[in-house]
Image 1 (cartoon, rainbow, N blue to C red):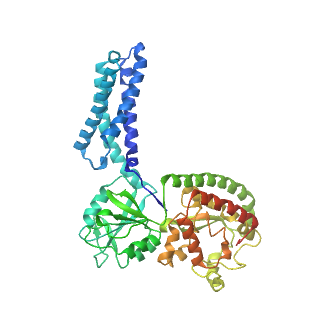
Image 2: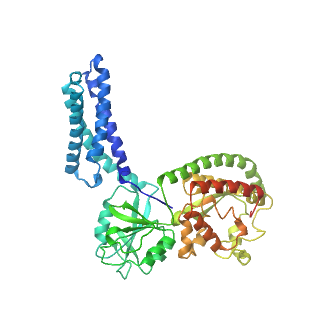
Image 3: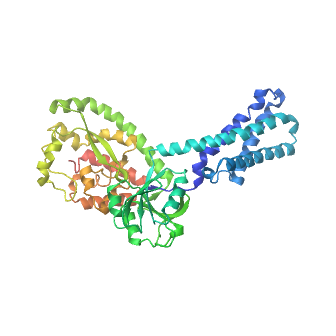
Length: 469
């Protein structure tokens, strides 16, 4: 699922807050200098309110944060001068018209004006140097594959790398008119051609694909549709628009106007509530996990000496590996014995399940799997953000390596502790392609209401033991 970026102003919101905060600090100067008579305290507090309103007016009318990341030192100095001068000039006009000018020290106003110029300018410079580091280290960075031509690659990369207002990184370049995949352009490796691009996407962590050319080269509609069907979000530059992009939305991406398409485009508000539910639910779940461990851990150790928790590398959002945690329900040699039991696998596809699995610890193992108690430690994965309460089943590395192009679509959202497959048969469904269809349905029809419905259905399924393994 892709979070729509919306208006670009939000990327400069920290500059707005910093400017307003600095201004409030500066407005304390008259009090520090002792220039405020006791009888004028109320008027100076009113001045703070007036200047803040004038600052808001400057933000709306002057648009001082437009292209702020692309401005050099001199241009930034000019922008700050215009903004602060506008604010204080408007403030003086308001004071004069309200006939309160006699309450304010002219020297204090001049000192505040000069201080505002200096602090705002250096505050902007500091924020512009700090922000890219925050975005660079953000765990939410998206891997974007650039699809372009030899002639336009360097120019487009220069624009994208100069845009520091979004948390994406160009992970590779696909050259539509290239014949080999060697070399780098501005430090970014050329990883594929149009012919093997889909193979690269299915085996690597790619969140989005940006198609951008100079308009002289047509991008095959089938290539674009294949990316969408794989669960990858695509952005198509308007300058090079030839393809049918119906169903997409227009937004700004890396300094370009683009049409964006994907299996599911959702608002930041919806994803915020989904994450909020995950955090609250995982905290409650971890509390329950702690209580359950007091009773379960000793039994597991007595029945099968070894670690109480089982960890395994699974594949998450768009191919990202992570470590999943469970209460150990199998004997210590379970992974080694898996190959011996492959001929009993009842799943048609890449998943592995057998009836009466002899690797399961007798008694306690069967009980915690039937009641899904073994999955409680995954609440830690949910709290960390690797998983969600509701999502798709995270595949093992072995399963993922066998994926075909259309299978990767089920990784377009975070894996979940429960999901549409788990509440509609769980292990009773033996066709992997059916699992993929159900996961795709969940992604394309996702809503907060659907998540709540699946959580409630999960509770019923667990209590009834339907499809348990």
